Image (cartoon, one colour):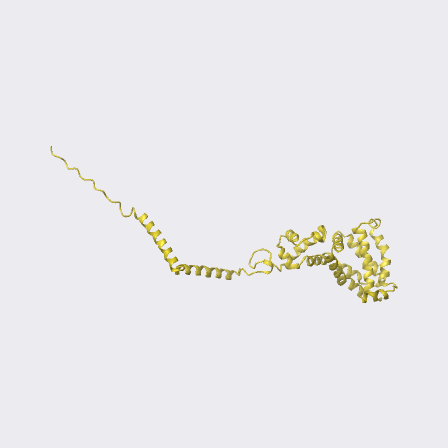
Length: 284
């Protein structure tokens, strides 16, 4: 029997492409490690890295410059370029002032805070400080806006003979008005409870009311006359509207006006011996 030759099975190697992925991965990792070593050994980033960073920084600066949104510190922590309300917006100031008036009327001077007003107006407390400087400044602005001093000054115009009648009638009707009465009461409460509020109210009255009133009088010592007239008017309002003492609190307003007007007219234009008072005042 003749033996048949069996062909030998030859082992073939995998194509070069089959192992290329592993090789390339390994090679890439080696290259990356090599690059990292060369960077650290060289004592600094490569030239390509520096160039990329410089390009990024330059591009960012260009964008900021073009859009006008550089991060410059604004007053009281508000940043320029940020969205939202900014200092100098009249609407924002009026909104803050409106919320402050409401707070002073409902909570009084001691219960009103800068943070509370800012929260009600949905602004940062720093913005309230920017507009008004302090709680006293906020109270001063609230009083000037809410008290109709100009309407009282209008009543001063006219003949002296009926000055008290005009002044008292206007004053009491403003107290009766729900738009003004609660604010009047809040201001008197604040002045009675807080020295700072009292000082602000006195300053406002002297500048806005007593000075024009004294200027309209032709009799001697007009400043003292105006002061006595104002003190009686404030006393009547305190007893009627704040303390609510009867029967004054329940009397019809026209009867109150008719009752107090003669006394106030006497203070304004009547014969009074004020020399001693004037001398005491000048000698302070």
